Amino acid sequence: MSPYRLPETFLEGLLQEDSPCGDATTFALGIGHLPGRLVFRARGEMVLCGSEEAARLGELRGLTAVGPVRASGSALAAGEEILCLDGDAASLHVVWKTAQTLMEYLSGVATGTAEIVAAARRGHPEASVVCTRKNFPGTKAAAIKAVFSGGASPHRLSLSETLLVFPEHRAFLRAEAPCATIVRLRRLWPERAVVVEVDSESEARRWIDAGADILQLEKMPVDMLRKIAAYATSSRPTTRIAAAGGIDAGNAATYAEAGAHILVTSAPYFAHPRDVAVTLHAGY
Image (tube, rainbow, N blue to C red; front, side, top):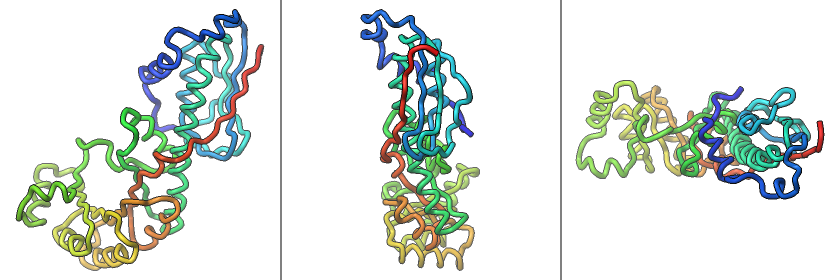
Protein backbone atom coordinates (compact mmCIF):
# COMPACT_ATOMS: atom_id res chain seq x y z
CA MET A 1 0.00 0.00 0.00
CA SER A 2 1.22 3.50 -0.80
CA PRO A 3 2.53 5.38 2.29
CA TYR A 4 1.37 8.77 0.94
CA ARG A 5 0.70 10.70 -2.26
CA LEU A 6 2.77 13.50 -3.69
CA PRO A 7 1.06 16.92 -3.57
CA GLU A 8 -0.85 18.28 -6.53
CA THR A 9 1.39 21.35 -6.67
CA PHE A 10 4.32 19.04 -7.45
CA LEU A 11 2.33 17.16 -10.09
CA GLU A 12 1.07 20.37 -11.71
CA GLY A 13 4.65 21.56 -11.89
CA LEU A 14 5.65 18.43 -13.79
CA LEU A 15 2.83 18.90 -16.32
CA GLN A 16 3.58 22.58 -16.77
CA GLU A 17 7.26 21.88 -17.30
CA ASP A 18 6.59 19.46 -20.15
CA SER A 19 3.58 21.20 -21.66
CA PRO A 20 3.48 24.89 -20.77
CA CYS A 21 1.22 25.78 -23.72
CA GLY A 22 -0.37 22.46 -24.63
CA ASP A 23 0.76 19.83 -27.15
CA ALA A 24 1.64 21.63 -30.39
CA THR A 25 1.53 18.49 -32.54
CA THR A 26 -1.88 17.33 -31.37
CA PHE A 27 -3.26 20.84 -31.81
CA ALA A 28 -1.78 21.24 -35.30
CA LEU A 29 -3.22 17.89 -36.42
CA GLY A 30 -6.67 18.83 -35.16
CA ILE A 31 -7.12 15.54 -33.26
CA GLY A 32 -7.19 16.84 -29.68
CA HIS A 33 -10.94 16.34 -29.24
CA LEU A 34 -10.96 12.67 -30.29
CA PRO A 35 -11.35 9.98 -27.61
CA GLY A 36 -8.60 7.54 -26.73
CA ARG A 37 -7.11 5.28 -24.08
CA LEU A 38 -3.66 5.08 -22.49
CA VAL A 39 -2.58 1.76 -20.98
CA PHE A 40 0.56 1.46 -18.83
CA ARG A 41 2.15 -1.96 -18.22
CA ALA A 42 5.31 -3.27 -16.58
CA ARG A 43 7.76 -4.22 -19.30
CA GLY A 44 9.72 -6.40 -16.88
CA GLU A 45 9.64 -7.46 -13.23
CA MET A 46 9.57 -4.50 -10.88
CA VAL A 47 8.44 -3.11 -7.57
CA LEU A 48 6.03 -0.37 -8.59
CA CYS A 49 6.02 3.21 -7.35
CA GLY A 50 4.25 6.36 -8.55
CA SER A 51 1.09 4.80 -9.94
CA GLU A 52 -1.18 6.92 -7.74
CA GLU A 53 0.57 10.04 -8.99
CA ALA A 54 0.27 8.86 -12.61
CA ALA A 55 -3.48 8.44 -12.14
CA ARG A 56 -3.74 11.88 -10.55
CA LEU A 57 -1.79 13.45 -13.40
CA GLY A 58 -4.51 12.14 -15.67
CA GLU A 59 -7.30 13.43 -13.45
CA LEU A 60 -5.71 16.89 -13.39
CA ARG A 61 -6.14 16.98 -17.16
CA GLY A 62 -9.65 15.55 -17.22
CA LEU A 63 -8.80 11.91 -17.85
CA THR A 64 -10.55 9.01 -16.11
CA ALA A 65 -8.88 5.96 -14.61
CA VAL A 66 -10.61 2.82 -15.88
CA GLY A 67 -10.46 -0.18 -13.58
CA PRO A 68 -8.12 -0.60 -10.60
CA VAL A 69 -4.81 1.22 -10.26
CA ARG A 70 -2.01 -1.02 -9.00
CA ALA A 71 -0.67 0.34 -5.72
CA SER A 72 2.86 1.53 -5.11
CA GLY A 73 4.81 -1.29 -3.48
CA SER A 74 3.22 -3.96 -5.68
CA ALA A 75 5.59 -6.57 -7.11
CA LEU A 76 4.75 -6.83 -10.81
CA ALA A 77 5.60 -9.40 -13.43
CA ALA A 78 6.36 -8.49 -17.03
CA GLY A 79 3.22 -7.46 -18.90
CA GLU A 80 1.06 -6.74 -15.87
CA GLU A 81 -1.22 -3.74 -16.26
CA ILE A 82 -0.58 -0.79 -13.97
CA LEU A 83 -3.09 1.83 -15.01
CA CYS A 84 -5.56 2.66 -17.78
CA LEU A 85 -6.68 6.24 -18.60
CA ASP A 86 -9.51 7.34 -20.88
CA GLY A 87 -10.09 10.81 -22.32
CA ASP A 88 -9.44 13.16 -25.20
CA ALA A 89 -6.31 12.85 -27.32
CA ALA A 90 -4.94 16.25 -26.33
CA SER A 91 -4.93 15.38 -22.63
CA LEU A 92 -3.67 11.86 -23.22
CA HIS A 93 -0.63 13.17 -25.08
CA VAL A 94 0.08 15.78 -22.39
CA VAL A 95 -0.02 13.20 -19.58
CA TRP A 96 1.58 10.24 -21.36
CA LYS A 97 5.34 10.82 -21.04
CA THR A 98 5.30 12.58 -17.67
CA ALA A 99 3.29 9.76 -16.05
CA GLN A 100 5.40 7.07 -17.70
CA THR A 101 8.76 8.58 -16.76
CA LEU A 102 7.74 9.33 -13.17
CA MET A 103 6.75 5.69 -12.65
CA GLU A 104 9.90 4.43 -14.36
CA TYR A 105 12.30 6.40 -12.16
CA LEU A 106 10.43 5.81 -8.90
CA SER A 107 9.98 2.11 -9.66
CA GLY A 108 13.74 1.91 -10.26
CA VAL A 109 14.38 3.28 -6.77
CA ALA A 110 11.71 1.03 -5.23
CA THR A 111 13.04 -2.08 -6.97
CA GLY A 112 16.64 -1.28 -6.06
CA THR A 113 15.56 -0.79 -2.46
CA ALA A 114 13.66 -4.08 -2.39
CA GLU A 115 16.71 -5.95 -3.70
CA ILE A 116 18.89 -4.63 -0.87
CA VAL A 117 16.20 -5.40 1.72
CA ALA A 118 15.92 -8.98 0.43
CA ALA A 119 19.69 -9.42 0.55
CA ALA A 120 19.92 -7.99 4.08
CA ARG A 121 17.22 -10.35 5.35
CA ARG A 122 19.14 -13.29 3.92
CA GLY A 123 22.02 -12.25 6.16
CA HIS A 124 19.80 -11.75 9.21
CA PRO A 125 15.98 -11.87 9.27
CA GLU A 126 15.78 -8.83 11.58
CA ALA A 127 18.13 -6.58 9.62
CA SER A 128 16.79 -3.16 8.62
CA VAL A 129 17.66 -1.05 5.58
CA VAL A 130 17.57 2.74 5.68
CA CYS A 131 18.24 5.15 2.82
CA THR A 132 20.23 8.34 3.17
CA ARG A 133 19.31 11.91 2.24
CA LYS A 134 21.57 11.70 -0.82
CA ASN A 135 18.63 11.85 -3.20
CA PHE A 136 18.71 14.40 -6.02
CA PRO A 137 17.85 17.83 -4.53
CA GLY A 138 14.18 18.72 -4.93
CA THR A 139 13.02 15.11 -5.24
CA LYS A 140 13.02 14.06 -1.58
CA ALA A 141 9.28 13.38 -1.16
CA ALA A 142 9.17 11.30 -4.35
CA ALA A 143 12.40 9.43 -3.54
CA ILE A 144 11.33 8.60 0.00
CA LYS A 145 7.97 7.30 -1.23
CA ALA A 146 9.94 4.92 -3.47
CA VAL A 147 12.12 3.87 -0.53
CA PHE A 148 9.02 3.04 1.53
CA SER A 149 7.53 1.18 -1.44
CA GLY A 150 10.66 -0.97 -1.60
CA GLY A 151 10.43 -1.97 2.07
CA ALA A 152 13.01 0.35 3.64
CA SER A 153 12.77 3.61 5.57
CA PRO A 154 14.58 6.97 5.60
CA HIS A 155 17.91 7.25 7.39
CA ARG A 156 17.52 11.00 7.87
CA LEU A 157 14.63 12.99 6.45
CA SER A 158 16.51 16.18 7.27
CA LEU A 159 19.18 17.70 9.45
CA SER A 160 16.39 19.02 11.67
CA GLU A 161 15.08 15.72 13.00
CA THR A 162 18.09 13.51 13.74
CA LEU A 163 21.13 13.54 16.00
CA LEU A 164 24.05 12.13 14.01
CA VAL A 165 27.46 13.15 15.33
CA PHE A 166 30.07 13.02 12.57
CA PRO A 167 33.84 13.36 13.02
CA GLU A 168 33.35 16.77 11.38
CA HIS A 169 31.21 17.77 14.38
CA ARG A 170 33.68 16.37 16.88
CA ALA A 171 36.48 18.45 15.37
CA PHE A 172 34.83 21.45 17.08
CA LEU A 173 34.43 19.77 20.47
CA ARG A 174 38.14 19.90 21.34
CA ALA A 175 38.86 17.67 24.32
CA GLU A 176 35.29 16.98 25.46
CA ALA A 177 34.91 13.37 26.58
CA PRO A 178 32.43 11.23 24.58
CA CYS A 179 30.32 10.56 27.69
CA ALA A 180 29.97 14.32 28.28
CA THR A 181 28.84 14.82 24.69
CA ILE A 182 26.22 12.08 25.05
CA VAL A 183 24.92 13.62 28.29
CA ARG A 184 24.57 17.07 26.68
CA LEU A 185 22.74 15.71 23.64
CA ARG A 186 20.32 13.68 25.74
CA ARG A 187 19.58 16.65 27.96
CA LEU A 188 18.72 18.90 25.00
CA TRP A 189 17.02 16.28 22.78
CA PRO A 190 15.70 13.65 25.22
CA GLU A 191 13.46 11.93 22.66
CA ARG A 192 16.15 11.43 20.01
CA ALA A 193 18.49 8.49 19.61
CA VAL A 194 22.13 9.57 19.65
CA VAL A 195 23.91 8.25 16.56
CA VAL A 196 27.68 8.55 16.24
CA GLU A 197 29.68 7.85 13.09
CA VAL A 198 33.17 6.40 13.46
CA ASP A 199 35.76 4.99 11.09
CA SER A 200 38.09 3.07 13.41
CA GLU A 201 37.82 0.29 15.97
CA SER A 202 39.29 2.40 18.77
CA GLU A 203 36.76 5.20 18.19
CA ALA A 204 33.97 2.64 18.06
CA ARG A 205 34.89 1.24 21.46
CA ARG A 206 35.11 4.72 23.00
CA TRP A 207 31.61 5.68 21.87
CA ILE A 208 30.09 2.34 22.79
CA ASP A 209 31.49 2.77 26.29
CA ALA A 210 30.13 6.34 26.36
CA GLY A 211 26.61 5.06 25.68
CA ALA A 212 25.85 5.87 22.04
CA ASP A 213 22.45 4.50 21.02
CA ILE A 214 23.56 3.73 17.48
CA LEU A 215 27.11 3.42 16.22
CA GLN A 216 27.45 4.10 12.49
CA LEU A 217 30.52 2.39 11.02
CA GLU A 218 31.66 4.21 7.89
CA LYS A 219 33.22 2.04 5.15
CA MET A 220 34.26 -0.51 7.77
CA PRO A 221 35.65 -3.88 6.60
CA VAL A 222 33.34 -6.75 7.49
CA ASP A 223 35.86 -8.44 9.80
CA MET A 224 36.31 -5.25 11.81
CA LEU A 225 32.56 -4.68 11.98
CA ARG A 226 32.16 -8.21 13.32
CA LYS A 227 34.65 -7.49 16.14
CA ILE A 228 32.95 -4.20 17.02
CA ALA A 229 29.51 -5.82 17.02
CA ALA A 230 30.78 -8.54 19.36
CA TYR A 231 32.25 -5.92 21.68
CA ALA A 232 28.97 -4.00 21.75
CA THR A 233 27.02 -7.18 22.49
CA SER A 234 29.24 -8.00 25.47
CA SER A 235 29.68 -4.50 26.91
CA ARG A 236 26.54 -2.55 25.97
CA PRO A 237 23.91 -4.70 24.23
CA THR A 238 21.55 -1.75 23.73
CA THR A 239 23.94 -0.09 21.26
CA ARG A 240 22.87 -0.90 17.72
CA ILE A 241 25.39 -1.21 14.92
CA ALA A 242 24.79 0.49 11.57
CA ALA A 243 26.94 -0.19 8.52
CA ALA A 244 27.32 2.68 6.06
CA GLY A 245 29.31 3.41 2.93
CA GLY A 246 29.13 1.22 -0.16
CA ILE A 247 26.23 -0.95 1.00
CA ASP A 248 24.35 -2.55 -1.89
CA ALA A 249 22.56 -5.75 -2.85
CA GLY A 250 25.88 -7.50 -3.39
CA ASN A 251 27.20 -7.13 0.17
CA ALA A 252 24.13 -6.44 2.32
CA ALA A 253 23.76 -10.07 3.40
CA THR A 254 27.41 -10.23 4.51
CA TYR A 255 27.17 -7.09 6.64
CA ALA A 256 23.87 -8.16 8.20
CA GLU A 257 25.27 -11.60 9.05
CA ALA A 258 28.35 -9.97 10.60
CA GLY A 259 26.23 -8.08 13.13
CA ALA A 260 24.99 -4.87 11.49
CA HIS A 261 21.46 -4.27 12.74
CA ILE A 262 20.97 -1.39 10.29
CA LEU A 263 22.29 -1.04 6.74
CA VAL A 264 22.61 2.56 5.57
CA THR A 265 22.64 3.02 1.81
CA SER A 266 22.32 5.54 -1.01
CA ALA A 267 22.47 2.90 -3.74
CA PRO A 268 18.73 2.84 -4.60
CA TYR A 269 18.84 6.47 -5.75
CA PHE A 270 21.20 5.43 -8.54
CA ALA A 271 19.26 2.35 -9.64
CA HIS A 272 18.30 1.97 -13.29
CA PRO A 273 14.73 3.05 -14.04
CA ARG A 274 12.31 0.19 -14.69
CA ASP A 275 10.65 0.27 -18.10
CA VAL A 276 6.93 1.01 -18.26
CA ALA A 277 5.35 0.09 -21.59
CA VAL A 278 2.66 2.44 -22.90
CA THR A 279 0.05 1.91 -25.60
CA LEU A 280 -2.29 4.61 -26.84
CA HIS A 281 -5.44 3.55 -28.64
CA ALA A 282 -7.85 5.75 -30.55
CA GLY A 283 -11.43 5.32 -29.27
CA TYR A 284 -12.59 3.37 -26.23
